[in-house]
Length: 280
Length: 327
Image (cartoon, rainbow over all chains, first blue to last red; front, side, top):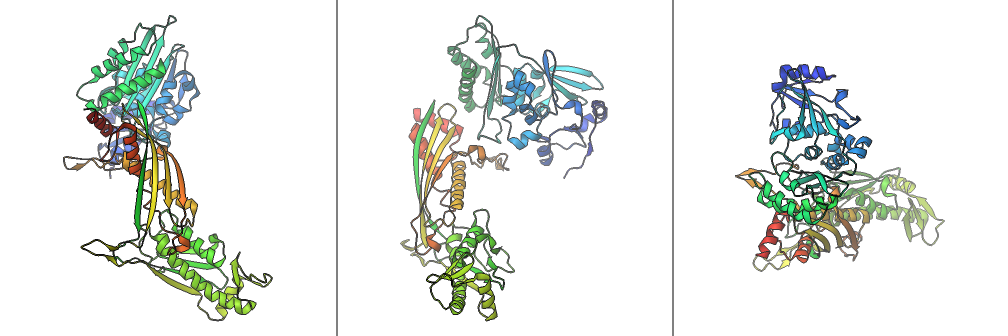
């Protein structure tokens, strides 16, 4: 049984004040779907735990002229029901709706998915594919904007400072005609840790040539990233199915490394073909 | 590529403990002065519905509504020993004890009713006892119970049922292993993704010989639950040890099916009554689980020509076997 000081700030400034003093020995908790099992297994033994669920500004989805802002304490269920996201970022809803099962989605948050930095995270790769940016705040550095792809430096380790709080996920609205697709493979149809996921965002110009494509596999490397080599196969080419196999092979070649087990490779190729088939 | 296949699994299973192991059960049925009925059984209902069928059996015999019976179970201070809830034996053994106790009580009540109504051919129905030949001659069960009490008769009956077998010859293996057997066949239709190795079970058709389904809804429930357990056994369950440490320590790591993994399940209840069972009933608890994994594994062979000899037939194992088959 662990004991720690439990603090629930009502404002962002209250949270930052607490973190500036205790950040280096404090665990931040929102829904708790990752933190509570970790506390139980004694993987973390913080002397302080800070609950951010009562800070209003950290919850909810809001729309600005060119971008969408999502509070880190927004639950996956809230994300799947958001009209703003349905209209502008359905990829995020596809990813969020497949996390665990309804009870997990009612408590788990997008900020937690990012902050926990699990290699098997479902939503972070989708945010990376959408070129999302993370807003961090602290007393020492003020407001800092970080591309989502740079958030995680190693498995279960973000590059956030000990006194930093994730206060927003900012995603630019996608140009009209953008196609997105997400796929998650698990050992069962619900409550399944991601065996592998794939997020794809693709844009073609008026002439039909692909101008922009972002491919982000999940649960295949310690740190999720865009696979540029596979993306480059498509750039400037017309939308066609014959490109898929070439890109799938490039994807596999690019990812063979220490992390991804050999047996996952053919699976990745198959998932890739499936997802690209939906998007092309 | 996705390939489909169909497979069949068949089984027979011994009901009870067999092999001369003690297999007895007692039940108690009591009728109170006001006509209410108390049933006592040591049996534990852990979700299969034995509580329900005990009430059904007593209600059927005494002409009551089964939901008015007061059932007390699994109380070592007041309930008679019914043996464990296991070996698919509860309906067959304790159900029989329940039937015996109910019929013994009915005999006492019948004798009082014969005296009061002056008729011998009587029916127990809708909380009344009436003459079949002259239905206007009737008495409420509650009144009959009062009369039995006033006469100082036996208004509580405990009955035992014993299915202990003689055992088999230890050298030849021949003899009386189990009291009786249940039989079942299941068909599985699967779709195998040859690239990912993922197996999806599309449909299971299950035909179970249960003798008599005292509660068909419960029997279907047992079949569906057993099928899902068999599916998990075939495709998901795996205890993983590495370096002497258990890696699958909790349900977070040990994969079993959820409601989202349930395929279409068509249950067929085959009723060929066995004279030794209560109303002809046998057992279905464990039989429900047994043919499923063989059916699924046979379906996988039908789909991709690969023989699975070790479970789980998960993504990695299927892909490895496909690869080995090519070589």
